[in-house]
Length: 139
Image (cartoon, rainbow, N blue to C red; front, side):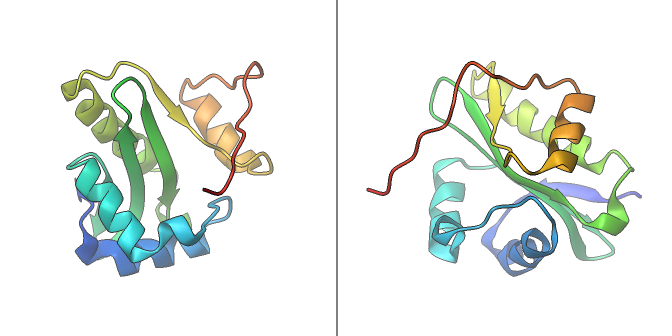
């Protein structure tokens, strides 16, 4: 597959949300509404990417940082486009953007039951952490 990796813009939102909905292991919430994604992309310009093949979005990832650490959210590749290094290419573009912003470490949130997702991340060199937990609260 020779998909083009391009910055994620709101023009791609409809296709991206459809992709996320059909990929197992992607946990969507009200934070993924169009206005929230638009705000995220504006706060983290040219850090999130989509993969386009034949005019269709076949992969997507959100990327941003807090000034210290980078964060990846919702990496998804269409099932028919997997095993072609597309996920790796998307992550590599995110890493380039993080390095340009002076960020040297990145985290990703993986839902515990997402065994395929965890297998992917460990296969490409990420290390699961058992020493920290995520604790959340609505504000």
